[in-house]
Image (cartoon, rainbow, N blue to C red):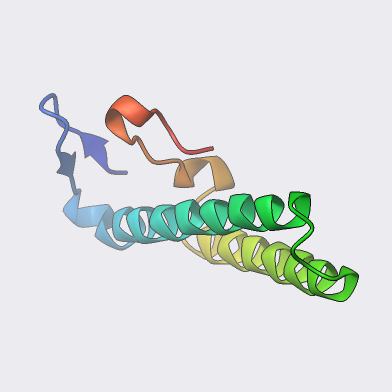
Length: 93
């Protein structure tokens, strides 16, 4: 597994480089999915979407989450492994 060096830099292990890179890429994708979900919630709360649009958006976000989790599982990763450390902003969920 990858490790974070004391100075905060990512160290890749040559024996697990595919998994380490998958964790990084899928973590970024999960972060973007979470941002899209927050934007969707704001749109719903403001009443900007029809019921049909809300349903379609909800289904799309659920499928995106499931697809990310499926991809993570192919690399032996759990959903919590996709959490990213954003420094002073904290960790993604």
